[in-house]
Image (cartoon, rainbow, N blue to C red; front, side):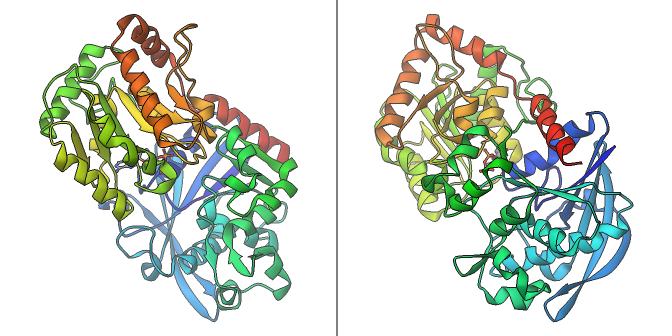
Length: 470
Ligand code: ADP
């Protein structure tokens, strides 16, 4: 039996800001279905976790966590959900706030969380073989584990979900927050700063990232965000495993949030389109192709490209819907276009799971022209809802979307290579052309309907990696 503890800062259904939460909410189930593996998860107990979940948690104990010269309290809670055991670290000072990231002391909050995970281990009633930490917020669990050896023989895996966010802190944070010997400073330092992600990459037994292409890309300066030299050194221990999605949850034939449930019927799918056109005050016409983007509105997702060519694209007989929150400039410019073209374009500046699902169901095309994309789940969810992805060929987008080839009839989406706004525009126009020609559109849809992105194969790869370690 292999016992694995996942440490991460978000996970569905409890708390979510992006794809990391989807992974933490679905990979453990997939792994627990494998023979001889049990995964449990430990998360911060945020204020924003819904009361209905909090009511079901039971308190195991409380203990103290050293954070520099202070001792901070930690409550340890437990709850089972969908066959997986979840633990939660409670501390109102750090997590009793609205939202989950974006505070001036995020560095300290996740130093505390990481140290609390280590201090919690004796109380978990779970004999951990492997600590598997995700992204910078949990990165220091790996370093602390290596340095403090809370359980002799325990191995560590670190997964990079996005190398852009690294958890930088000033060098003073080492003395102020860490409570480890000065000889460990070099392992946490990068360019005269403390860097949580560097610390994890340096200390982990194995490193994974969320697609084979991204695993290669981050070894290059363009994608490596300054950590490429270290990743090259650790290359023999670095592997890319593509993410899956929970296909029971993201399932248009059972999804309670959408207007008309369907498996492959385009007629039913169009009912969802008309429902949303009405909701969003767009022109009601099932035949107008609908393009959507559901995303954090940040540079990474390629919104500079979309913004640049939207005016031109909106001259076509199309509708465009953007759902997301993020950079003020993007929020403003997409809102401007919906005011200018109220019957053709809608911009909804919020985070809404039901609306996201209604949009996946309503749309014909899903726009995701990312500058970089570690894996990307949205394009997989889009395919599940039979919405055709239009992506830039980078990272996980390259590994999951095959461009449609009208000669051979292969491919389940559209893609372009360069980070260039007019390549996006031409690709969107090409998709429109295919949409207008049923003899070409039908084979494409047939390929979309066949696309499968469950966790099955990837869970096997993780399992193999764990076997190697224990
Ligand atoms: P990332 O993790 O970089 O944000 P992914 O494509 O991996 O991108 O995952 C994004 C996840 O967040 C998807 O499940 C997507 O549907 C969801 N999402 C993004 N923005 C919103 C929003 N405004 N409302 C609801 N869900 C959203």
